[in-house]
Image (cartoon, rainbow, N blue to C red; front, side, top):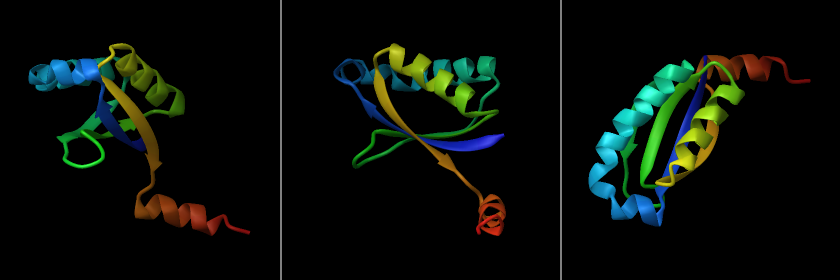
Length: 97
């Protein structure tokens, strides 16, 4: 499974109902489970982003499906970063020409 870091910002709608954010996170975990995505962690943060999620998905298409399903709810906008472990990065570097 591939690892992804998802950076999220609350929309105006998401801020108006911020008291429900932990309940929404549980619903997100269930949405992910149905798609075969493993949520490694959900963190509420200070600074440029309001939420950071670390997840593992079978492929880019599945990660994208999860993110657009989340975005369609209207509470958060996301930016997703594929992430590589040290071992994975070593394999990438080994292929350099």
